[in-house]
Image (cartoon, rainbow, N blue to C red; front, side):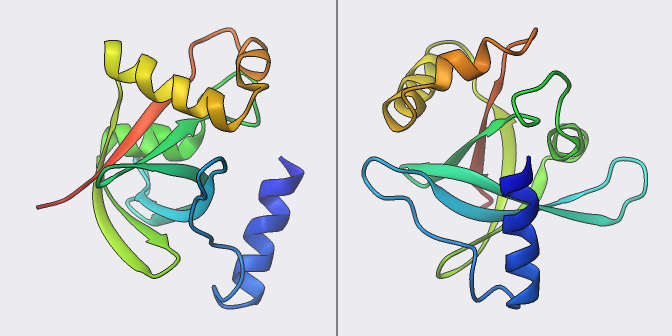
Length: 137
């Protein structure tokens, strides 16, 4: 959690000039996801790790690998339309959870990027959602 807190702070202090990067073949990228709060209706932003799957961005709904769902994921489920800032621009997206074979394929890709993924996920009492951010038409 400390990493993401610090990362968010650096992003804010530099006006977004530092803190976002594109994924590399065996590494994830960092993006700023902005969702609408399910209770307040106010915009909420968070930095997430992601990789690209065709036109989609794929991230994990984790709360520091502890139990409980992150607020951004609860908000995205309530209102799936969101905005993602990536290195090189902004994308309007719709978020959803991957299911079945699609989830397994994307989880395997995350496992290639992070060899400790299964051990981290085992700390949680519930399955970690694999979140797909699809471009809006």
